[in-house]
Length: 85
Image (cartoon, rainbow, N blue to C red; front, side, top):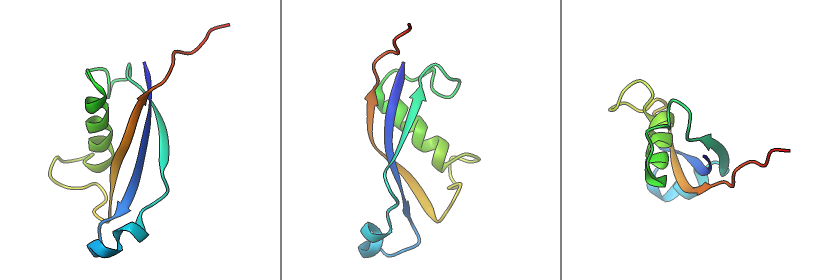
């Protein structure tokens, strides 16, 4: 099953009162739950957690991959199955 993940990245090097001005544009990514990274996901919450982990903590569970920004998921929506002709 495919899911549409809506996310954004924000700059973690600025003060909290400037965060809203430093957010990036909203991104949309289609995720296939049958791929190696997502096949164990049982819920939309699992999809969200794996997506954030894959973007924020690639090499280590304790160190951000890019310390100057962090990706957050806003929404995960199931997509309808593809129609075959």
